[in-house]
Amino acid sequence: MKLTATFRIALRALKRNKMRSILTMLGIIIGVAAVIAMVGVGNGAKAEVEAQIATLGKNMILVFSGSMTSSGVRGGYGAAGTMKIEDAEAILRETPGVTLVSPEIRTSAQVAAGNQNWYTSVLGESEDYFEMREWEFTEGSSFTDQDVRSANKVGVIGKTTAQMIFGEEDPVGQIIRVRNVPFRITGLLKSKGFSLGGNDQDDVFVVPYTTAMKRLTGATVLRGINVQAANDDVMTRVQDQISSLLRQRHNIRPGHDDDFTVRGQQDIAEMATAQSKTMTILLGAIASVSLIVGGIGIMNIMLVSVTERTREIGIRMAIGAHGWDILLQFLIEAVTLSSLGGLIGIAIGFATAESISHFVGWPIMVPPVYVIGSFLFSAAVGVFFGLYPAKKAAALDPIDALRYE
Image (spheres, one colour):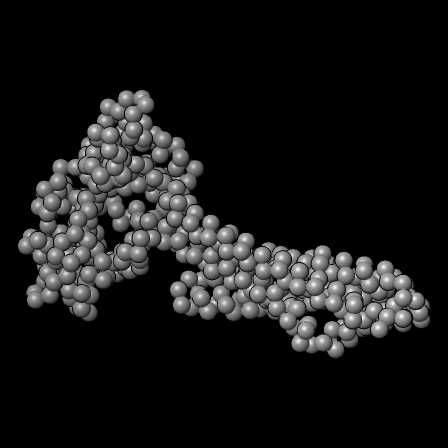
């Protein structure tokens, strides 16, 4: 029998039982749709995290004060002030591959101007901080190296803080009080959005770190040090050199824990995306179970179909159809059900991912390999689970099939 005729017979058989065919496809549709939606949203979340990591700047290495052990109690970064200005200067001076360094002081304070006030984050940084983070200015400019050396009362304001205090008025050149200390605003920062931790990066007031230490906090140690490497190729080597330099400067003996933490931009990205990657794999695996269940459903229905159409199979064999023709017909029916279910599932998966993306604010990213893979897998499910019923139909004895009622 011609292949085209076998296709027509198979499709005609599916059309006779439209509702059953649709219900049979449902497992495949749900499985493929779930895989596409979960992969799309998961990759979108990963891309969003990577975009937020990029707001740190290029080739950034963060050195945090802390990670110490005292009286048997271990603390994470920030648990103890172990970094000094001299450490930052040594990193810039003695570490090949380091281009810029910014010591960091971080605190929170009430800032006010006129009759308006706002509680915001106050950062003490060097004049190179904005270049390191590639933070552009909407108005004005950064404070200078001279401001840092003289601990001048100047600062740069973030967009959110500026709007809360000055509204739509230009803040550059105006005076803002931080803990009753007057600061002159030299620049307004361009918006950077939210950080990985969900904090508004624009809700900030940045001042020279020397000013923050002398006039705001009275601190003698740093919260950390921001370091920029020359390029990606030297990142790992620079991290190792910084660790060795600080261990030497802090007199840390071999076998003892560091009293600081060094994290490269890539390390932070990997830690931040690890959870979303795990969840994507887990949800994708769970969704794949639906495909297996859908395949079992196809096999079940095809077995029922073989029983229902035993007499029809006997008639076809009696008029010249071979076992191969019967096997191919039932295999085509199974693959058609699974493949069509796969295509519908892909469409529903994209629609679902778009809907989720609209609510969570993430982009959706479904690599073509997942789309093609989902379709091929659904077709393979049809072949795998349709083969046994097809073989059973092809193995029927024509005489017994004709007598079947």
